Length: 166
Image (cartoon, rainbow, N blue to C red):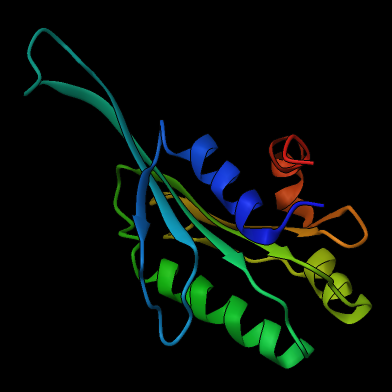
């Protein structure tokens, strides 16, 4: 049987070629195993870079937690703390296209209350009627005891990545 830390290490190996990994961070008392950030800027210009025709920036912030939660309130508090911490990093502008905020939870056991909350929780925010981009929240959880993957509607995209760990 694998443990939470080995799953987190495998995820770090998956993210590290493309993302900037930060370890040993403390976010208002929450210590994720690691934070992964990806920032991409695409642009098209005419002859010279100073003659930019268009530009688009995309960002992703991923927080990997190996934690067991005793209550739904503790889970919600942790989720909201990480979500709003990442939202503070978003800088909407005419070049900002979108930002994904992702939480990956690896837990020995996830009770039915928390599972229900993960499945139903959605967070979307548009900036200036989407002219300055938007933000989506994604969450996926791995219940080691049940060998089960739980995700919210936007987190479905991550199912293949996490299922490769099993």
